[in-house]
Length: 543
Image (tube, rainbow, N blue to C red; front, side):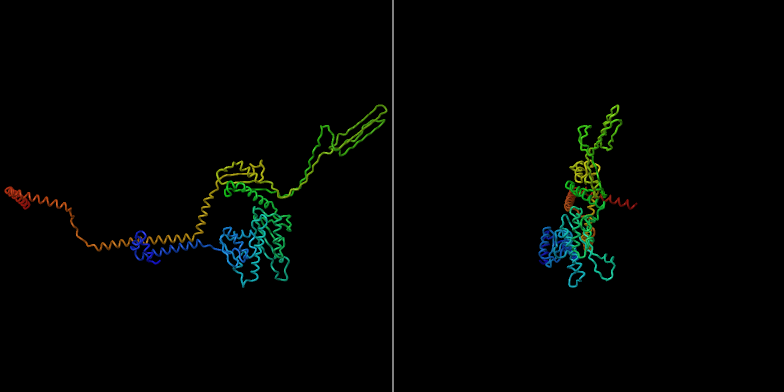
């Protein structure tokens, strides 16, 4: 399509008015309009290219063809845009690279290759042995992290390894040698937001220690997603190094908070609730022994039956003297001592019997040990976004929270606090942040649009001023060409002139007929006019 066809089509728009409009413009104005149109079109094209441009970064490199097929299938199922190169390199958008890599590592990928693009960017024929060892260390860290991610309940794992430094000098102190031992740290994020078990922590330490040459088990530190160290001593899982009251309380508080959010989230929405829990943990190890005594069942108060533990019986018989005898019982659970005395007068006769019986009492002894870390006190505060609690009453919401946290019914009012109030300026703050973020992210596009609008405004202003100046110049030229004519008397209406001419002719004919019919009167009137005119002249002369 040539320019003539374009011009013909433009002239056809609006019945040729566009062509007439262009025909009235000067050459400079047409050039200016064309330049502005080119700038606007170029700006629109550049903006569209920038907006549609996607920056891709390396996700995995040097993966096998079979594994690349599996990873690409996973990306397709997840709806992630990707680019695959024939050398085993998979690339994704930069904005989703980290999350996609974490998801794939959690799934156990890659089993081959590297997760860093440093290798593909820097490795080559000139790569040193030290650099190659560094790339291998990167791969080892990712491989161990992916393996830990396969443990039950583990969401993500990040491994950092510091390899042992080689001994460069023959004479080195033991302290220098010790400071250069290999060490590692592992940060494990659990799905429930808690900490890995002691068995899992011990397994992680053994896995890392066995994967790195000359790695001592005690040089591997394991942390949970809350930053609490959960390493175990000697890898046996018997004692954690993070057994402090604050750390255990924090773990319990996080678990309680998540449980409350799980029961209230479906009702109010996770974004409309805020939960805070505060717990007190007793870290003292307590040995406790308790003894319980129970009285055997008896028929009545006088019933002395039961299991006899000890019985003492004494019998005395004497002739020729008087007196009493017997030993009273001294045990707390003994029957009252019984004395049987027979005394006869005269030459005398004496007989005495004594019986002491100890009965067994039911006794229960209990011994127990309270391990440190028991929860002694717990309080929960919940804030709900809104003016009311919605479909739940305060009592129902409090009971729901109590059941989720294990707080006794008698302590619900004291330990649980619920407040319903609109969240302060949350929407406004979000709008301001979104607006600021939008301006910051699209500053270049805004500047281009502002420049285009300014250019269009300046061009329109120049066109209007030029057209106004052209109109003024044309008006001045027309005034110079028109000759100056003398002022003419107003021209009356031709019909009015004809009417006046007819009346004049009629009057003239009437005067002529009167003078012909009355010549004397006409002569006298003429003399009177003449005399009057003479008197007037004479008076004026005398004056």
